[in-house]
Length: 111
Length: 114
Image (cartoon, rainbow over all chains, first blue to last red; front, side, top):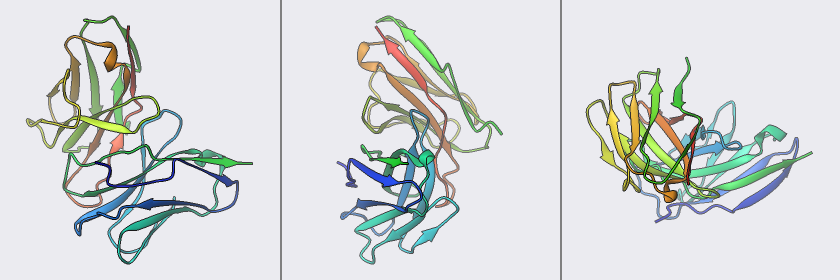
């Protein structure tokens, strides 16, 4: 069973912020939210993860709602190279076999 | 550091043939994984290895075997390939020792079974 729900596709203008939503209403207390992306047919690339606090790194920001039932990945200044499929995954960090990739959101950044 | 290296990059097999997909990582990670990705779909876990000497089934293990040869290498074997195994295969590794342990992926092996 899918643990997350994401829109199948989104568009974003180059230079604008891309906000990618994810619903994870059944998330457990020990589960983190992870985001990966896959460009063309390359291997997925880790972006960011968080438990309950907002997180930021050089690639993106992650906003998790207070009830932890949803989150938003923010790419502050999207570029054409950010066009990719973005996956939102929830899992307990110690569970080796629980990284379930759904269909993700296909983000297209347009000039 | 090369990260996670997969060989070969492309392979075409006839139904019933066998082959082994190779994966090696140079990050001293304990855990390694094999995923498959079918067109338009997300990745599905085939097998994983939490540490050297251990392997466990994932979501779609039927038709595959694995070997954790040492800490660096984790191979995936198809004993009798079937057209349903046409897919892109990704190997990944992680430390799995702390919460900040993302998966690092190779660039995949594109397998076609005719």
